[in-house]
Length: 614
Image (cartoon, rainbow, N blue to C red; front, side, top):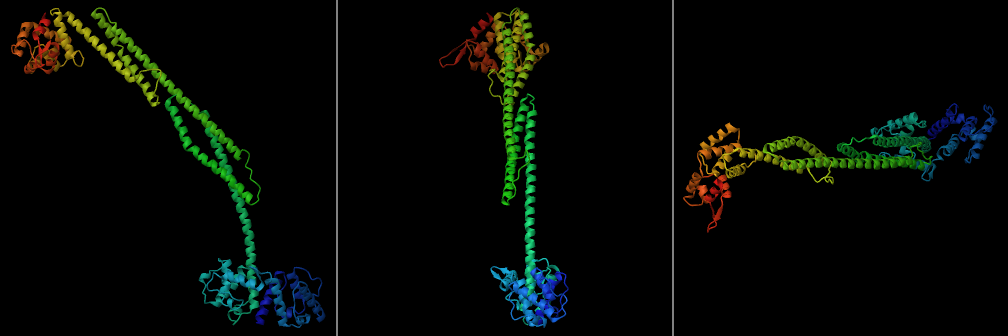
């Protein structure tokens, strides 16, 4: 045990000497005997000078003075030395020398160790137990056998510096290898001198407690220094991270605040330079763009403004937490500047909204007036034409010319109606539902134009027919009236012409019934001669037929035949005679009738023919 202690203590003392530029000792007995090395060690450990002493003592008395000077310094530091004097050191009493050095080890290496209220040996043991507790193969109970397999040493290293060795890959049964590895790693990476030999731990029945304590204390101080350095580094690192975080947050705040202010300014500039084209489409597009802005861009800015405000608050909170100076944003980037810019934006938005709404109202009013002016003017022109048409007078040819001149104005009116329709469509697209400037709609005017056109057509047909009638000198007025009323009745589409079916029915109503073949021949002949069965063609046809075939007496005989000799005919008689339904309807309306006892009308054809041919 003494040899282990001597070697361990000698190495421990050498770490002090070599660190201060002194040569190492090789033998405690020999190297401490003249007191020089002892004084050097006390000056190193006490961090002070012991004054003048014999650096090259030759006589025993000089050596005694040196040793006594060192021992006195030890006692002055409150270290109690028992049963040792200068002569014990000079004479090389190894046991007492080892006891003295152990006292120094306790005082300068182990005494300042503390762990949860325990100090020195108990504190060092508790520290080792706590650090190695997670390692199931390690059970530190003392400073002797518990360290004999090297695993406790490896556990201490791995606990603090896991990158230096892989504990899980250790061969737990290799006592010498594990101990040698721990010694090597500690010396190379932790500046822990190898105070022990592998054999001191692995080959001893009970490793020397004081030697082991001295070596383990070196671990404690190495890791404590490391922890302190790491603490300092972490403190500086944390502060640097804090300051960097604050710096980045400041930059982020300033960048985002500047960007937000710029965006608010730019949109207001855009609004201030925006112009309306005067069209409803343009106004609605600008309104839609403004609405989209409020639902998208504006909401993004609301979020960004809140985030920027929160960011500045977080910066100030960080600075106050660490007692640092408050951050003052650059000129123009304070929250008050953001608030002012935001209030300006709100005012600009209100102005923009009012401007758009006023423009839309103005455009709608213009559209109302434009449509009303066109519609009212159109109605007035129609009214003028109607008055002129009703005032047509003079000879028939003059009337004919007047009506045709009026008719030439209809195409212009149709073009104007197209403009009215376009103006009305513009109102519809602009959601203009009411118009106090006019009572007309385009549909009203279109209907009225149709009536005027129809009146003109009828007037022209009437005048043409009157001219034809006037020229028919071989017909009585009653016959002309009868033929004209017949033509108008069967001219259902008011084209002043008759179709094949209409011509057949009109002739049948006059008692002139032909086979389909004959009727087709007559109709085709009229088309060849007149181009259509006009009133003139119809009258001439009846004149020809009347002059050639039909006399009043012949018609009476025809009606008597249909009536079966009765002085009247019934609707059934007419139908049985296979007259067209349209001819039956016509005769039913024009022939005077009386109802018999069963309420069936009896048509007096005699009286009717008398009136027609009178």
